[in-house]
Length: 284
Ligand SMILES: NC(=O)c1ccc[n+]([C@@H]2O[C@H](COP(=O)([O-])OP(=O)(O)OC[C@H]3O[C@@H](n4cnc5c(N)ncnc54)[C@H](OP(=O)(O)O)[C@@H]3O)[C@@H](O)[C@H]2O)c1
Image 1 (cartoon, rainbow, N blue to C red):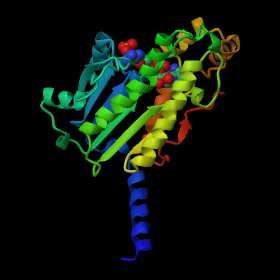
Image 2 (tube, helix red, strand yellow):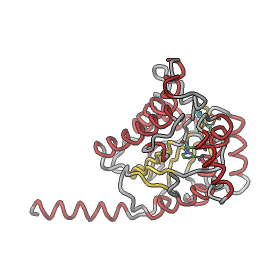
Image 3 (cartoon, protein in one colour):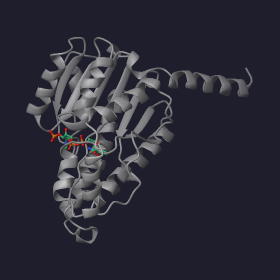
Image 4 (spheres, rainbow, N blue to C red):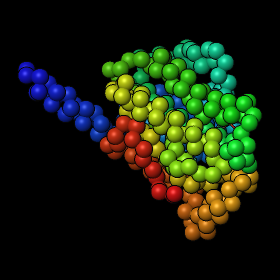
């Protein structure tokens, strides 16, 4: 077959692949930051969509909060297996993430062969030092810790995930929870903006190196979670606090379920371009 035809066929196959609802396949799904806020909402909405015998792993530091999300899920569904994995994304000591998913599989008598699709949702992130201006950032530990959680830990966890789920003939999906802060310089959100920008670019490189992955970079917009309340209570940027107050007054501060329903719709449609920034609602 001439080269041009081969390429055309491959691109048609890619288009078909792109359009298949990601929730149709029996999946192994890991969601970071699943103990509250947007991650909790994802876990609750994903289990309604995933086929029976899929496995969803809820990940965060607070095991009790994860167990409580698990109980919420189990009370409404019995078809998807819910696992809890306590982890600290900021603990980037050597080998902390290595083999984590191999261990989850073996501890639960599972094999990657049991699944048709693997999905990792990088939702965990923190906003730190928002009570400081950018030129007050002089504590190396503070700066390092923000990047450990938001960037380094996310990258190491992603590597660990794809070391375990390395079969590129199967569908593999990454969701990168981004923010408008990745592209907009918001005063007092220095470390967060820089970390989110780094994550988005990391995902673009991942997409370039691994075209078989489907990578959704999705910004949820302003949503009423602990993270947002933390900003409202201690951020030095009065203009931002005023804007968030205004969002609350006009109903633009969403409940977590709203942007996550949008995310689910995007994943169902599966027409997004790999690692291209998409937002639930333009906020800035
Ligand atoms: N809310 C918004 O308006 C908004 C807007 C744009 C983007 N986002 C993005 O959406 C994502 C979720 O935000 P959210 O508002 O739901 O935040 P949140 O309510 O603060 O929840 C953060 C989640 O991350 C976990 N987490 C924090 N530090 C961790 C660590 N060191 N190791 C492991 N897990 C950790 C927390 O659980 P534990 O404390 O139990 O570890 C929690 O489950 C973030 O990526 C955020 O940047 C949010």
